[in-house]
Amino acid sequence: MNEPRTFTDKIFLVIKGLCMGTANKVPGVSGGIVAFVGGFYEEFIYSLQKINIKAFKLLISGRLKSFYRYVNGSFLTLLIFGMLVSYFSISKILDYFLVKRELFVWATFFGMILGSIYYIGKDFDYWKKKTFTAAIIGLGVGIAISFLSPAKENDNLIFIFICGMISVSGMTLPGLSGSFILILLGNYVLLLVDSVNALYDTFLELIVGDFSFTSNTERLHTLKILVVFTLGSATGLVTLSHLLSYVLKYYKHITTAIILGFITGSLGVVWPWKKTIYKTGLTGEVLLDSNQKRVIMNYERFLPDMTITENWIAIFFIIMGICILLLLDWYGKNRKK
Image (cartoon, rainbow, N blue to C red):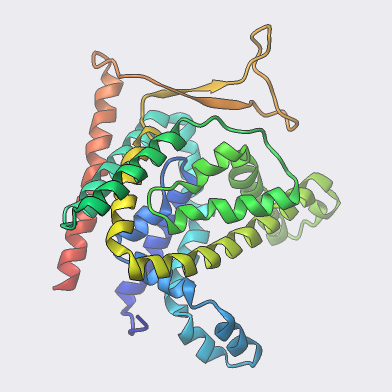
């Protein structure tokens, strides 16, 4: 998996990282799906699994080139670079459209997940009693998670570290949305909006030589939260990759069946036609948490009224999302020729 990469391969790997980073930020969408459909899921898990004691020994002994080759550094560097860029570019654009054109964003991702189910399932010919049962279990878990109610925001650093470990599952487990898990844990806004924006603003201030943020206690606290969250994510990423590499090696067909079921069950999370339900008090007012943010209880899903033009446009975006996955499939087949 350490084969030389052409310039085109490197560009596409960065683009895949951009897509993974963007998908990880959308509640209900899994960056792992991007990796699975993009054809680099196993290499991703394999590369992360190489971050082990041997890798640290190479690093500590100063054998940097050997360390870089051992952990498949060119692959991880380009992919992670794309993810980081997405958080400060594409993710910002996505935030804008989630506010201005939320229905169309959800519709596009709903279509992409439908397409991913087709993509993963079309070549899966191992339907037996065990794999069918695994798919049913995955389906049930996916549906159950989509109807859980979110908790309150919590900025305790130990809890933040745990959030990092759990949320990164969206990158390693196709169908399990890390960002949706953060909503359930109550920390989506804190960790994927406020913290990222604080880092973005800090970078901009540093570029112009403004160090006033050093006396901003709220900003420093938010940056500390981001550091702890990142450490938790890195820990979870490496830990899960070792587990998944074993599972993929010995139980590949059962794992694929579970993933198919789980992705199908998670469709309810990204159902385009829904409205947010906020927690209210006895007098009907919307309750706020300690940071003056509205407390999300869950989502109310409903069927679209097809007499409204906007809903037909949403159907078009669903089809477009499916087409994006079909194009990825076409690209993967032609690339191998």
